[in-house]
Length: 214
Image 1: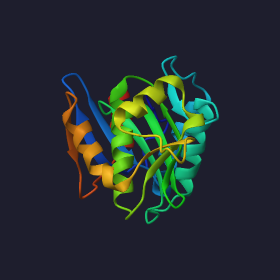
Image 2: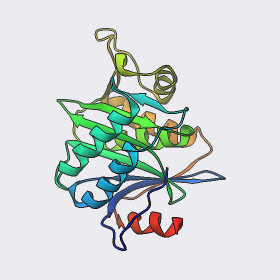
Image 3: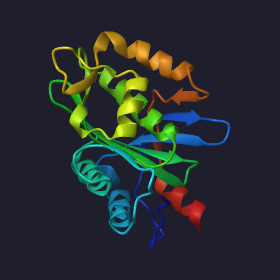
Image 4: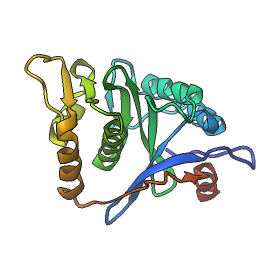
């Protein structure tokens, strides 16, 4: 899904979290907040008019389109200093948006919604990034409500490293002692090269996306 602009200027300086490189593509993961209002509105308008691909997978009780719009609405209200609310997007080869994830700290970090269209690279990148963001909050687990998983997403989350606690069968979780092990496993078990940006650079991705499509 590509974003084009009808104006010459853009306002998207998403916080770049990490890059996943495969032999054929590059997936960048960015965090959105209210400084990205222009880009968020353009993307929200595009989503409203678009039929998502048939291979779309999701976490959440609503439709993929509504999950995406809800995440964008949250991002537009999220300040740069809000470390307990996260909205991340994945961008393939600097031009195609391939997924979004919305997570909220509620004692633990809970994935409130996730939509991905395309291959496993975007799912891998978004889950890997939100796990690393969760790891920054001391003694915090990453949780997914199981009833909100589609079949393919359910299988992928188990493969990724989420487990079902015996005393809480309605959720999948990765607990703090297991986070680094899951991160290391996912970083080494696949044909990916992952670069994490500790300085979290601002990137004018809106300009890159538009330039790529003109």
